[in-house]
View 1: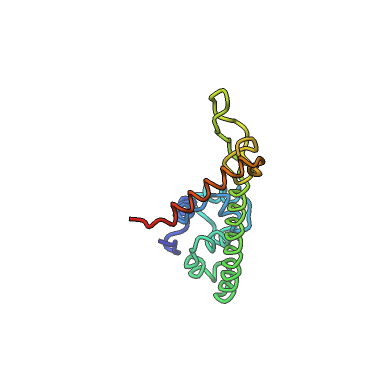
View 2: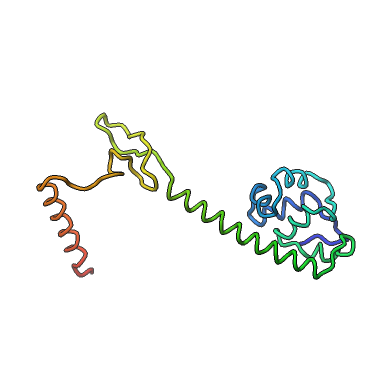
Length: 171
């Protein structure tokens, strides 16, 4: 339930709304355009002052505009001004969320994990994999294919067998 003038917004309410939106303090701070310590500061408050700029941005990001609409005169905003700022913040938040998701997807493609292939000693390889792959350069991460005629013939036979199995009618 969004806070109303009869029920002032508290730091605990702000934390509850943030968690309900599935945001961390860092994510909320980025979307609102403030530092993480501002989120921490306001969530620790017993009573939140509705005239503060950071709080207006938090509530806009968290979808609590009714509180500010009900207190528009107290904050000095008309509804038109609030709607314009709300639209700008919504567009900015959507762009930032899309950018964060794109960065995370890019990180996943460049992620390097332990290879884990069995070595000659019978242990797991501890080298880092090639970017976006599961194996290191020694265990197939940078394979350039077979070099000898026998190796090429073996790979060609294996591929023919795979395609034949794929073409067979399935039960």
